[in-house]
Length: 102
Image 1: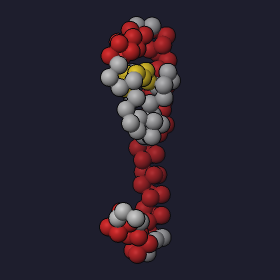
Image 2: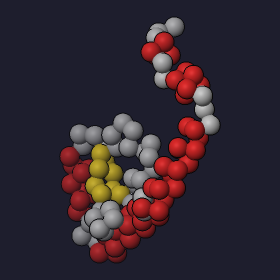
Image 3: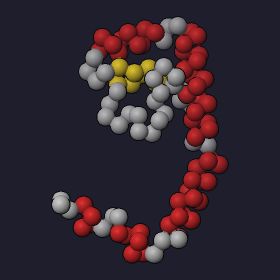
Image 4: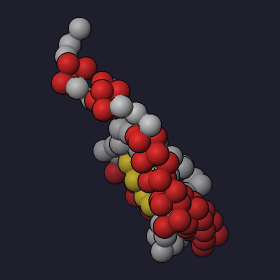
């Protein structure tokens, strides 16, 4: 996306979690296993206006969300949050007992 590539993807489990694959905004989507729909979406990319819009939106999203500066800011925030926790607090949510079945 950072280089203007348009994403054509299935709606796999979790695709929306990160919020980068926005249907008809930054990507074209199709149902898993639906090759006819995938082909129809690929054909839509011959529309130069659609391709340009998806390309522009995807690049804009990546540059705003994944820049070096933004990455450093996010790492700094995470380190500061962790530094405020005691080891016991930090481990509490990730201890083996927290994954046991109730």
